[in-house]
Image (cartoon, rainbow, N blue to C red):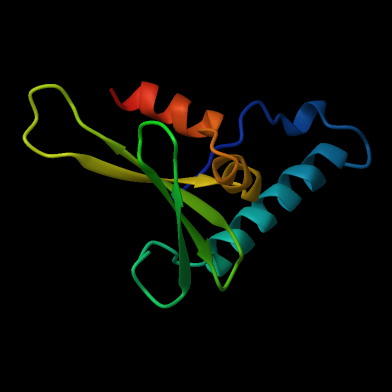
Amino acid sequence: MKTKFGWFYEYNPDRDDANKKTASVVATMIWYFIEGFYHRKNEHNFKSNDFLKYVVSMPVEPETLAFYKSKVTEKWWMEVAYHKPGARYTRNSIIPCSYTDYQTATKGEIPERYISTLAKLI
C-alpha cells in the first residue's frame, strides 16, 4: 500500500510563537512528504531482475520461506503463504521485513513477523 495523501491537524497560526516555529515544522513535513512521494521506487514486481530471491528450507511448517531483496534499494520482503478455511487456493502475501528476519529463518526459526502476519491473515 502506498500513501497518497496526508493530513496535518491542530495547527493554529494564532497560537504559534513569534518566530513561527510550528509553521516552519509543518512546512518542512509537507516538503519531505512531497519529496518522498515523487522519489519513491516502484518495487512491486518481485519476479523482475531487480530482485534476488532467497528460499530458506525450514525444519517445521512451512517447509520453505521465500525472501526477496531489492537490488536497487536493498530492502527485504518475505512471502507469507496462507490457506483460508474453505478456500480453494493458497494465497500469498509479500510483506516488508528485515535482513534479521532472513537470518532468523536461516537458523531454522520462523521470524516473529511471519507469525504475526499469518495470525492477521487467518
